[in-house]
Image (cartoon, rainbow, N blue to C red):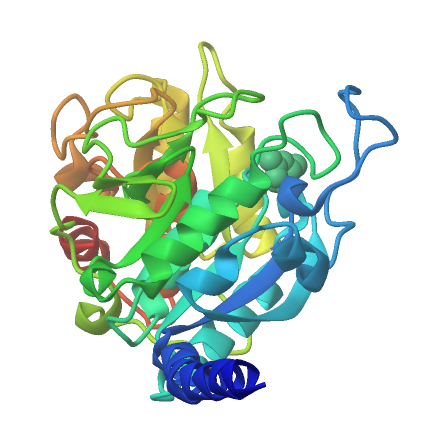
Length: 356
Ligand code: ASP
């Protein structure tokens, strides 16, 4: 009996020591908010092996439950901001996301943000946020190539790693990051390179900025271009973005699209040019005419890697065009939309393409 009482006392003592400790530990965990927008990571199919599936079917709470151990990385809470395939990502959702992130990160109770997102346009959303988030706390996008119901779905591990990166104070000041397949990329540099492979995001010119393996991470470098707290762009009070369209260049292309877009009200046009941002003479003439009508025309490239150099094969000084540098076509469109929230000359826009 005496032994039993002593045992009970020992257990009670142990609990009195452990319980507050584990409570304190929970309180000490960083708070990461997951903002879900849909995509394949939330997609489902009828069987584990079929190629066809529907994006944006699974809710955020179910996704969190599918990640064992996530509760040890951070105090994780989730919000469903949208549930779309990212082919349907819109300016409206971008603005909603950016405003919610700024609101959350202004609170000292939130340490980092993860955004679950389809992979098709994830780089555009990430780069947009990179320019308008007003905090140096970690903001990480993630997604998956295989739907949640697939054999070897990689979404749960991607989400686990994304939360690990967002929860780690060492991740501060890296701008918006994209985490997939054990790699950490910067929003400005990464692009989708494969339609189906889990290793789809690559940063062809700059390289990945870090690695994350089962939550253990290492950074190699910080992105240099201006972002987040260093960015002059803001979405405060912004309800829509100016219209900017993309024209894809090819051999013997018709210049007609340029004139049509100007007529339709485009404020900016990004041309995914051939090679070093080139286009045939007729299109260049149409572009120069658009510039004279007040439209900003950016020369980008359809080539997956490399720079579009100002005044190389095209005389930008003469035509009034802007060279995109190594910013790819969809991200050039994002930068131009934000740039055109204010009236700017081609020279001013060129300067923005140098800085961001
Ligand atoms: N179409 C999907 C999406 O972008 C593809 C994916 O998420 O991998 O939402």
